[in-house]
Image (cartoon, rainbow over all chains, first blue to last red; front, side):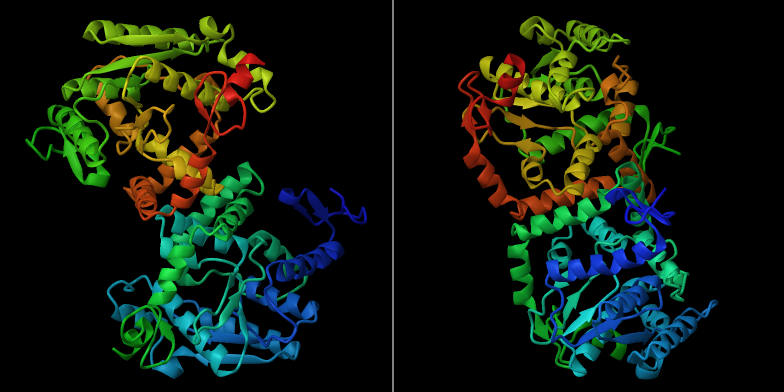
Length: 306
Length: 306
């Protein structure tokens, strides 16, 4: 297979786009696509101070790399979750990101969960009945809390995350299988800050697949953590990703079509009433000052302080 | 495994209900469930004249059998589609149903598509560009047209179909993968006749799975057509059913939960605006007098008369 642009040997074939590209043109194509999405969805403006949540995986590091390539300055935020039982997952992730940031002279914030709260994610999860043995929900909660707080405290305008199409489609798939209207109303590539305590969130990679991003990271020689978080093994998200991959195989573009048709339905106002309902429910946590749907203290404060 | 009711040897284990039953109690349980759904969803009232669309498959014959068991009188409608290339699918289906109706002294209407319109489903499909080699969409259209017309001409109040949970969930899955709002707004176990030319439609089996109905038909010794329609092989519906079965295996009840949570979202008014929009678009076909969203003649008349 030959590169559509130059006729050289292609390194990747993007079935859904009917596009084969060589290394040089692929490494050009990806940032150009991201640039297009940033504009199309109004994600970032020139004066924005941007914070990227980096995990050490391919997606967040590729995002940081791509934004740099596009001349968009962004600082990083790494949350050290202390997941170091068995494999040194957090330890290695942190090192990987520190090297990435140092080499490229990028500014990195680090929040060490254990240092800050005296307990790791696993310890927090084990205290709750729903989190016991299944720390993913608790981990998500803690990360969202910290990301929002750091972004606001340090004066950023927007938080960018590395969620790719597979991530987003899997979450959408799970939410749809249960018709979780509250979650569906809140899902999207741009989450506006419709509460004074909430940071605006954007997902510039949401239209690129896991495979496309892995290819980018490898060809760009970005050192990243290959392993999934040890807690994620056997998670529902992985099952959903497998199912979507199966659909994709049968009909290239099925995954993107699923997500984009959802966004179209949303734009048509399908979830407006529910969104409105949720916004009206938002309170301010008397302890940390962050927005919460709980009537008193937010779930994070109740969980960590308990 | 033993029957929960009598302790005899169970013939079926319903994982999702954590219920194992012997033959006698299973054959009691199914009609009781259907009776419960008929009342819960307000499907049928005592004075209703009911027409059942029967295909010769397990579901529609089981439905006819169950309604009889419950003392609910219903007439049958068989549409002979003339699908007799290779295997004599329509021929054998028709015979099966005729024997079923004769033996039980039930009244059966037959519409022979070839006799009535001078062409079989395959011939109709081959005339259209979208139907060529894929007659399922055209077949659905023709069946809906005939069912509605016969039900109204012969003075029935309601049309009952044998759609089971697997059918309904697969259609929902497909509609959701593309967020087909028009179709989603119209899907459900009870479709009210909100146009003077439209018959009310109900699906009393929509909460029972394919497996549950096959077990019922076999244990009740109902002779039915085992084969899928030869045109359906490799269809999207079958792929979707496989995927839902995979989810069901991992989490018993997933399929029903998917469908019921959709109904709950619908009840909350999620699709009200879209439903309203569609109703406002309904016209009357100047040729056949049936309702249509097309501005002039309905798709059926355009297709058959062309």
